[in-house]
Image: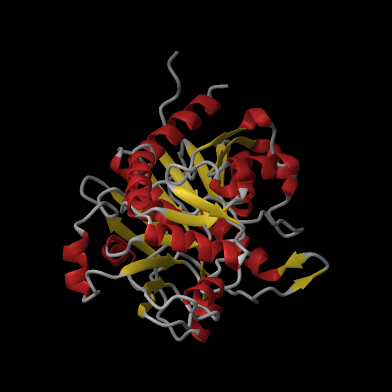
Amino acid sequence: MQFKVIRKICIISEGYPTDKKPWFPFVDQLVCAFAEQGIECTVISPQSITKALMERKEFRSQRWIKKLNNNEINIIQPYYISFSNLTVNGFNFSKVFFDKAVVEAFKGLPDKSFDAIYGHFWRCGLLAAKLGREYGIPAFVATGESTITLNKSSNNVEFKKFLKGVIAVSTKCKDESISLGLCTQKDVEVFPNAIDSKRFYLQDKVSCRKELKIPLDEFVIAYVGYFNERKGSRRVSNVLERFDDVYSIFIGSGTDIPNCKNQLYTGTLPHNAISKYLNAADVFVLPTLHEGCCNAIIEAMACGLPVISSNRSFNWDILDESNSILIDPLNENELYKAISELKTNKEKRLKMSEGALNKVKSLRIEVRARNILQFMERKIDE
C-alpha cells in the first residue's frame, strides 16, 4: 500500500540547542536526522526575554539557519516574556505567552504548506493540534516527559482529538498518555530515544584516559545528568564516599553538587565532548527517579558502558539483565552493592558492555527518524 510521503515538517519545541546552550539536544538530533533524509524542516522554538536578561546571556537571532551536509534547517525563535511558574486560577502566564509567540510565528510564515506539524512534548503537541485544525495540516505529538503535566493554559486539552498520532519514547510514556485520556491505544506507538552514532561510539579506553589524564588502572564510574534529587547525584556521591578506590566523572550542573573523594571531573561539557569521558569510564551510574526515556543512558551504552540505573518502567524498553543492573533508585545500599559487583567482576562488566553495544544497534537516530516518518505517513492515510 502506498502512503502519503512527508516532505515538509514544522516542529514546535520548548527548546533548541546552540553550541553555547546545549538545551534539548535530543530535539536537534531528530530534526537533523529528518533533514538528512531530505525533509524540509522548520523549527519554532520561542526564547524567553526574561531568562536571557536574568542569566545575562545574549539573545539569539529570531531567525537563523542550521546548515547540514546535505540540507539545512530553518529555525525561528521569537521572543516572549516568562514569569517562572506564576499561575493564577490554573493559568500559567509563561505558557500563555509562549503559545502566543508560537502561533504568531506560524501565522507569519510565508509558506504554510507543511505535510505535518510535530509538537515535542504534550504541551507543544496540543498546540500543534490547534494549529493543525486551523490550517488543515495533520498534527502529531512526541511524548517523552518524565511526568506529563498539563493545566488550563496548556493549549486547550480538547484539541487532542485533532492529533493524528502519538510518538512515545517509552512504554511508560505511552501508558501514562492513555491513562490521562490524552490518546487511545491505537493512536500511539513506542519509538525509544536514539543516539547519533557519529558522536557516541566505542573508543579505545586507554587512549581516552591518557588524553584526559585519568589513571589507567583505576575503576571509574560516570554520571551524566542534572545535579538534583530526581537524577540522584547526591545519592551517587554518598555511596562513592564509602569507597577508597573508586573514581568518578560527574557531568552536569545543579544544586546537588557531588562531593566525594576521587572526583576526576565535575561540571558541564559541550555535548560533543561527553563521548570521550564516557569511553574513559568503566560503568555508567544514574539512579534517576523519573524519566521519559533517558538519552544519557543510551549514549553511555553506545560507548560500551554497563549501566546501573532504576528498576522503574521508564527503563524497561532499553535496559535488561544483559546490559544493566537495575536497583531501587532510593536505596543507597543497593547502589553500593551494584557498584561493588561490577568493580570486582570484570567478566560481568565485559558481558554487559557487549550487551549494551548490541542493544544500541537498534537505537540509532537515523533509524528512529525513518520509523517515525513511516508511522506519521501511515497515520495520515488512515
